[in-house]
Image (cartoon, rainbow, N blue to C red; front, side):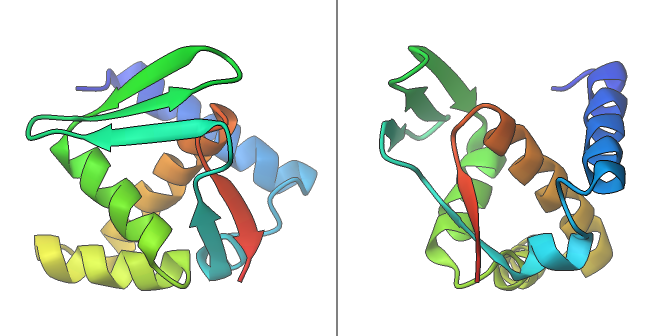
Length: 119
């Protein structure tokens, strides 16, 4: 489980990217498509998904929800479609899932585990 300070730090970094123009808007993120870049491999197990960045040599473990989010993100035509699917699957409000998914994408992107491309 992530500490409250880490979540706030991620939100702050996300807001900074938005303000500096490195991320144009939440709308731009939602219309983007997520893909796993070359040099990143992943493997799903019952209790976690392991993601290895071959360039950095670092591996990351995702809990089952994170693994499912990554699976849906990389198999969807846009992040917005992934949000809708996840909101339906977990029976949560779209606005809640949207925030979580945008933060998750930011975290994955900063670690070089996904690329966001225009949809």
